[in-house]
Amino acid sequence: MNIQIKTKGGMTVTDAINDYVNKRCESLQKFTANDPTVFVVVEIGRTTEHHKHGDIFRAEIHITGKNVGKNGDVYVSAEREDLYAAIDAVRDEALRELASAKSKRTTLVRRGGAKVKNMIKGFFN
Image (cartoon, rainbow, N blue to C red; front, side):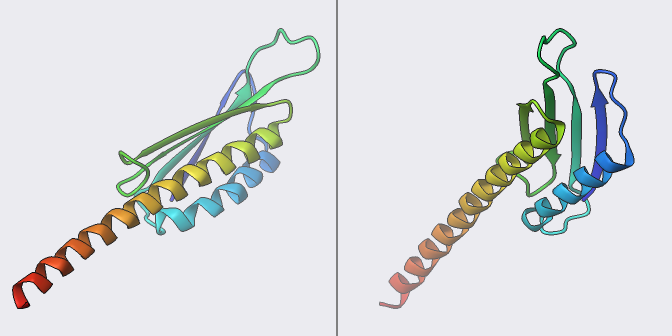
């Protein structure tokens, strides 16, 4: 799994942010089956400069790969008042999306296997 971190809104990626994002993205690997062709783009940044009471941070994850999501593509975004909270929220949502896609794919395979089994039973009865 290849991870790329992009910034927006005049932010710079510090070592702490880089380590935090990489640590959070490790949990996504169990749904990508350790496929080296899976590409993850994490984009973080401030949304605007005009808020009266602090900054609003936005985190986005775009995952592309052969066996990822519905069409080989998952995109999730979240906005929070804290950068680390935004990263956690977007990671949780990405996990939900990947788990949902995996269960649908598994269900489809099982239904196909059940149909084949019933066809074979029909030939021998």
